[in-house]
Length: 507
Image (cartoon, rainbow, N blue to C red; front, side):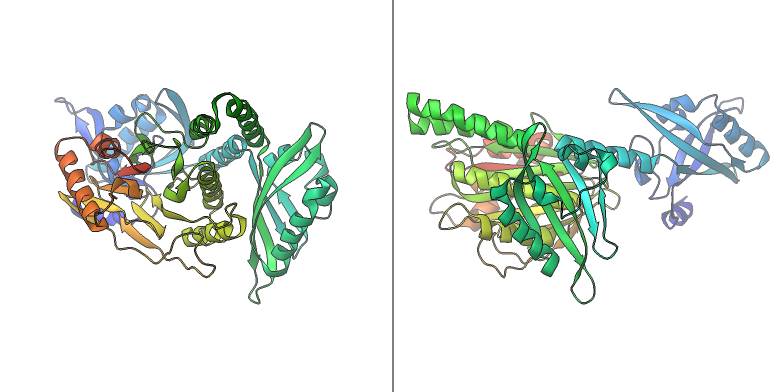
């Protein structure tokens, strides 16, 4: 069986080896998956070795009595290769029906079957997911080919601009006629820099529509030729109107609070509402790309309830997952504003497929050019993209504390790639590293509030974290590791944010 698994490991595409399970009378009652190619993926998202050991009728009960089942029996009995017509398979996952269209081929190998398949609806499903993501995020993709002078918009961009799709995408020359006059000079200058030397754009602006003024944002970057001349621009537009309205409503409400209860009370109330809006904390573990993610956020015991600590844990269009933990220097509404700016820009850049070091370079430039504080804003950050198909996490950091990897009863901090804190210098450079996760691993991303104490060396705090985390796992508290670590910190002098990224053991 190991030899067959070795062959399948080198096979491109999905394929499994099935062993028939027979009744005492010799009839085939079921099949067991004995080996599987790495690219094997079923409708529920199980892949590769996750499928090994499963029984067909226990895992896919609606297959019984179908042409596919009869084809398996015929191939097993006669040796004739079964090549089925495309069929629709439905499975209910978490109460939601999931349908997929497959073509299946089966061939006999001794007393077993080698089964391979093609899934026909993958592109359609990914397209649908991408459209849903654009709609839910109020953003749409756009590209401009500067060589052929053609422009492409996704459907959501037409909705953002309140434009009839029959008119086609708007040319760059048309855009100024829709902008509010006071926003035109800065956006025009940013677009000129983009087209002249390829400088990336992340710029807010306002347009007038039949429904009133809309607050939009453009994030774009240029693809250049061998001479460094831009040949294509791609990016997205995002409608921030609802967000701006919420911010204005919060500010309007806060003015009343300032009069009634004083400045500090009002700031605390506003900060609490901003926490719910900008940094929702799940009440239980998240499930992303085959990982279990426990999240903890604990504000400082004194002062404003929200500081600059933040996190993101989201799925990406290609099936991978993005994890970020950041810490903006300082507290108060200024830190919260910088946190929101970093959080949303990180998501936008990563969703468009930007490399992680490039995201950090953009964020560094963003803080240096847009800081509200006259002394500038700085932040630390650690960010990783996890690929479930090879269980590899690619990660970067900007002046942040090292992730803690807990594996097989031991704990160690990952060696750190190059990267100074954001907003510190214009010529900052950022490297990246990778770590392959194994079943049972826990990887902790955290802010300094979890390990720092006045007058205590940071190395002591890191050693304490490793020892405490191992102790909690020995006590069986792996499902709530992040929340348990945060709860053990006495008298929080600083905000605490922790992500525990856990790859469950194989069943």
